[in-house]
Image 1 (tube, helix red, strand yellow):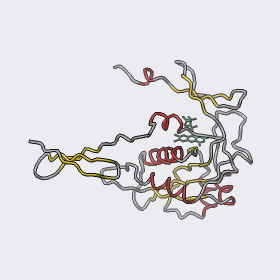
Image 2 (cartoon, rainbow, N blue to C red; image 1 turned 90 degrees about the vertical axis):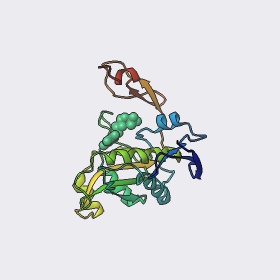
Image 3 (cartoon, rainbow, N blue to C red; image 1 turned 90 degrees about the horizontal axis):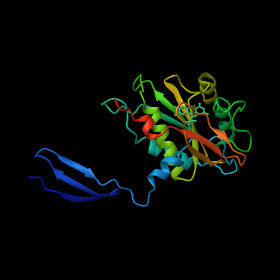
Length: 227
Ligand SMILES: Cc1cc2nc3c(=O)[nH]c(=O)nc-3n(C[C@H](O)[C@H](O)[C@H](O)COP(=O)(O)O)c2cc1C
């Protein structure tokens, strides 16, 4: 017979169902109250214009890394090989910004100019002394960081196109750390509107006259295969 017990945790009530004598199965009630999950997902975009006068703090960057460090990690050994460098001072920000390539498909656009640049950066590094392959860890942590930014009324942009040698020199980074990607953070200075993507059309977005960015996304039915 299964007996159901309850205990309280920070997340809410945790149901403890003893499945056998050796260990419990813990069912967590993860339903987050007052949280518009769909809205969080939709608002968590890659922004390319920011309000530079609204500065990101080191405390906020630390909070975002606190979310990132809780992400799933490669292999059954839970290696957690990623490390993070934070930047929110102007000189370091500029050095990092100079090594990034901004959204190639906004043709003729070299990236945010003065006044609309991100004000903080998290450089995501792999520690080669922990393991040699990070599989998908960096993508998962990058999304955790962006979700955390949205939750704090901010936004960001993942940049995997990085001039790695130049950034390594700028940060004086030891060789044991591989530069995986950079997440730029700031107060979003643009509205992004999701649009249905026509079958066969590309994913290029466009700006309207009001400056809003329209971003196509494939439909649910077009991404679920029926073989
Ligand atoms: C792994 C990864 C790497 C990316 N690298 C860059 C980059 O180097 N420069 C850039 O401007 N955007 C980069 N992006 C952002 C994409 O351009 C963006 O995700 C895409 O335009 C869709 O927009 P959305 O994220 O708002 O849905 C990257 C996104 C991902 C997931």
